[in-house]
View (cartoon, rainbow, N blue to C red):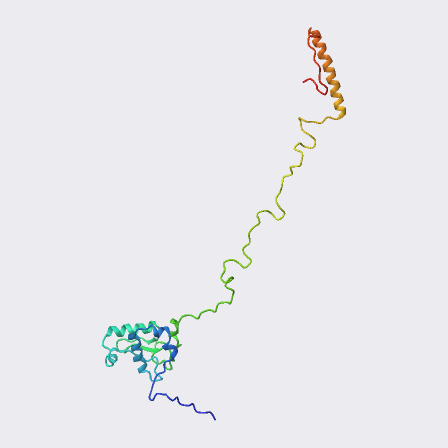
Length: 227
């Protein structure tokens, strides 16, 4: 046998409409103007427990409850809808009566005569700030740094195998010599010497024929040839 639920010691007598503490602490309710909060209480007063969605803010009814400004009623109504505390369930008009509203923290049990076919409570939560994401427990020295922990990669100024260096020990002349310093073979040197000797003998004969022999003596230094 189930135990009967114990009645709260501070329970109210008569009809009432519950208002969650989350709603009273929400950004939607706390940021609302006094005019909007007072108008919300007029809607709560109409709630019977089974007529959410059929509530109204008719001017004639509000005037009997002390509301004298039509402009204040319209502004308060618009603010309650903007903050998600109430939602319009049916548009009123000529011979259709006033607009109908629902409190957004309660369900709608009867959709008869309403312009909506379904309802999901909780619009008043949309103004609450988003939950904060828990930060990682990184060390302050490495958290949110702009470069990786191992640092950025800096290219080496020289290749890994080193720079290419010039070989200054090499002889500037090709191995086979050049046109100015051609090294003759010993046999070729002997032929050149004989050819030079024949040239000297012929030159002396020419000088003798010209009558110049014996007037000027000259000697060819060793290792030199006439040019």
